[in-house]
Structure formats: C-alpha cells, structure tokens
Amino acid sequence: MPPVYRLALPALCLSLILPCAFSVEAADPVPATTETPAEEKPVERQPLLERSQEEASALERQIPAQEQQQLQAGSDTFLALWKPANAAEPKGAVIIIPGAGETVDWPQAIGPLRRKLPDAEWSSLSITLPDLQSDAIAPRIVEIAPTPKAADTGSKNSTTAAPIEQAAGGEAEVADKAIAETTEEQAKADAERIFARIDAAIAYAEQQSARRIVVLGHGTGAYWAARYLSEKQPSQVEKFVMVAAQMPVKAKPELAELTTTLKLPTADIFYMDKPLDRNLALERLQASKRLKTSGFSQVSLKALPGNSKAEQEQLFRRVRGWLNPQNAVN
Image 1 (cartoon, rainbow, N blue to C red):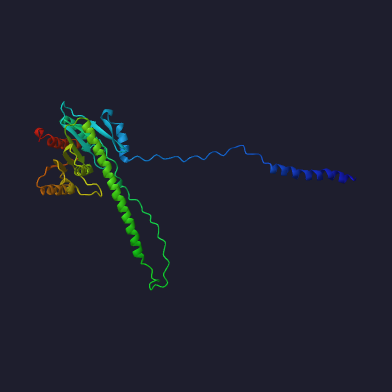
Image 2: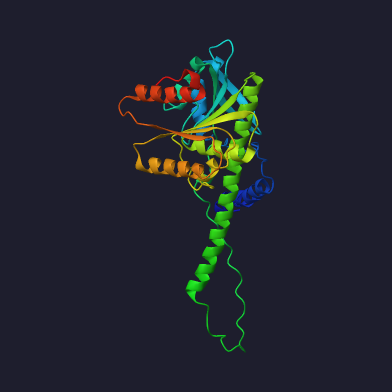
C-alpha cells in the first residue's frame, strides 16, 4: 500500500467514530442536579390603621396607664380615658365625645375638661370615635356597556341613532344613583359604629357605679351625641352638653331638628365670635322656643385668642356651673 494511503486511513477511521460518540452523549443527557425552587407566596399586606387608631396608639405612650381603658364595641376595640372624681361621693360621670379630627385628649375642650371635671366631683370618660367612611372619596362606579341591539331595517327610524346627550345622561343617572346608595350605606354604618361606642362608654360608667351620667359632645361630637340621644333615648343619661357644636359633612337630619326631639335638659354652649356659629345657635334656640316644654338652654362664650389657658378655664367654669348650679361661680 502506498505511504499516502497508509497515513490517510487512521484519519478516516477517526472521523467516522467521533460523530457516533457525540450522538450517544446527546441522546443521554445528564439529569439536572438543581431543583426548581418552590414559588414564593406573595407577602400579604396588613390592613392600614384608621387615623384615629394611629393617634390613639401614639397617646398610649404618653398618657398614664391607669387612665387608659380599652373598651369593646362590636368588633371594634377603642381607647378611652377614665379619671375618677376626686370626691368620696362623686356626683356622677361625664362622657366626653370629641369631634372630627380630635383625640381623647385634644387640647381644646376635650383634654382640659376631662382633667378638670374630677375636681368638680364628676368622673370623666373621653372616648375615641372611628373615622367616618362616608367622608372618604366616593368610589368610582364602572358600568358594563349593554350589548347594542341589531337595527330594525323595517322601522321608520331605523337609521336614526339615539342622541349622544341622552345616552350619556342615562349612564350618569345610573352612576349617581349607585354612588348615592353607597354613601347612604356608609353613613348608616358610621352612625352604628359611633352609637356602639357610646353604648360601651355608658356601660363602663355604670360599671364604675356612676350615680348620674351626662354626655358632653364637642364639635361634630355634639351632633353625634345629639343624634344618639334622639334615636336611642337611653334612660341612664340625665343631661346633655353641646360645646361649639358642628354638623358633619353630608349629615342628616340637621342639628336644630335633633335638639327639638331631646327629652332631657340640654345646654348649648357656643362661641359668639363667628357669625355662622352664632346664626346656627340662634336657629337652635328659636326651634326650642316653639316647643311647649323644653329643657334647652344656651350659654354664649367669647373666644380668647392667644390665651388658650384662660379660654379653657372659662369653658370649664360654664360647664361646672351648669352641672352644679349650687356651686356656680360667675
């Protein structure tokens, strides 16, 4: 055999063997040694606390623990501040209801009154009100467009389309109705939550052997207290005090209408400096005068800008004088 062929023969054999080896490796792949990690579950977010809950949590770190009470109203647990009367025989308990945006120790009216009333032989219990859901932004109502009907070719007006304004108006009416129903349901739920908390406060005062119970509301808290007393008419409550009463947004009925339905002595303390407040107070007074019998009375105060301490002392003296008329100090 010529030398050239002897050299080419091994190379030819090698070229025929290598493809077979590669095909065997490809047919028998090495199993993967790493396992696919299990899918991670999405982290569940905790529901956001209401603003009133956040503020109550902050107050719990500042106020003495012996004053704090956690009351239960349905599924709600809320902060209340209790201060017993500084007397061997307390006259009773005053339940203080703050207004919108106020806490159980608000520096205007709420805090000063709850701390000073025990020196007037009245225990005090200020409570936390929940955030109003009816004040939140109304949800957007998404309507599914109805399936268009096939045009009736035999009709005289088959080629006439409905006016755009009419179609848009119909959709708007449906959306407005849905929003109104949602708002009404939220307002009803708000009232039920607030009433449940006032119920819990009255029950706690009774547990503390309060001989008499007075409800005092400040700002919008006065409205909710008046509405509670009008609708519930609890026999345990003997008197009612409104301080700088305000109407919540979209609330019904009007405060002047509510005060005429109250069956207990009511003091309406207002500040004469603001024309709107003065006019609303006059409206409440005139409504009470139309009744044959009424325990409604008004006390006007003058704001003292720049002297908060004197202003709060003035308010306390008026409240104390109405609660304890024999000890009234002018």
